[in-house]
Amino acid sequence: MDIALPVLGGLGLFLYGMNLMGMGLQKAAGEKLRRLIEILTNNRLMGVIVGTLVTMVIQSSSATTVMVIGFVNAGIMTLSQAV
Image 1 (tube, rainbow, N blue to C red):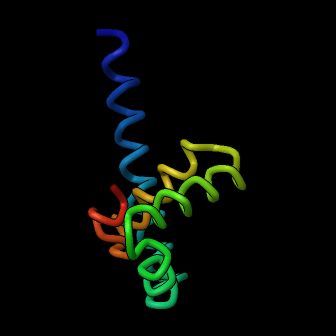
Image 2 (spheres, one colour; image 1 turned 135 degrees about the vertical axis):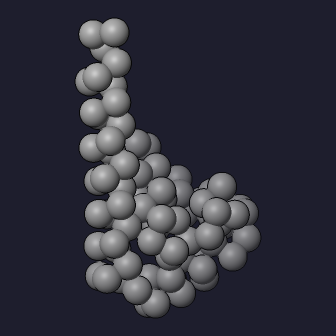
Image 3 (cartoon, helix red, strand yellow; image 1 turned 45 degrees about the vertical axis):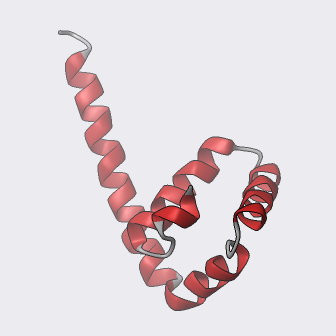
């Protein structure tokens, strides 16, 4: 039981942060970023290549995953593009 409260608190902070990031991305990028992502992920192979390159550049698969989740939450990417 001692671990349940910190886990729930951490999950709550994570979800709150994802919500804030999604709103910020939507305000900052909007339609231009949506079009760019649509072009770069128009087929699965291209999406894999772009995802791999982004992960290599920022050297963190976790950061790439968080960015993609933020893009989906902001409506910049569709779920099928993210997968």
